[in-house]
Length: 116
Image 1 (cartoon, rainbow, N blue to C red):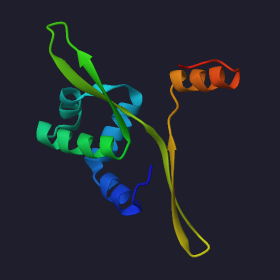
Image 2 (tube, one colour; image 1 turned 45 degrees about the horizontal axis):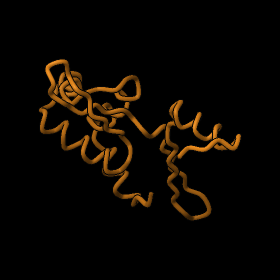
Image 3 (cartoon, helix red, strand yellow; image 1 turned 90 degrees about the vertical axis):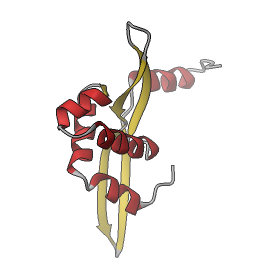
Image 4 (cartoon, rainbow, N blue to C red; image 1 turned 90 degrees about the horizontal axis):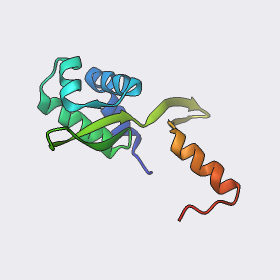
């Protein structure tokens, strides 16, 4: 993914956004859960989640409630953001979280397994 460094800096400059990433690194959360935890408006939650999903910092999945309604849950996708100034250059490195399914898929492919 080709992400502009400025976009990343602007996305994480908000304390609410940083808290959102921290909270969803512990467990997947709905917008309502985030609204309650962060004590911000639902519109603010949706604005931040939309931006973070677009940057691939959050994963969004759809859940279906017992009454048949669906809603999104969010989980942190990025594990580490590193800023480095070396040799007169500013560098940014993103490390993404691997989930068990991704690791199993890579292992299976390395063993010659077919994933189709």
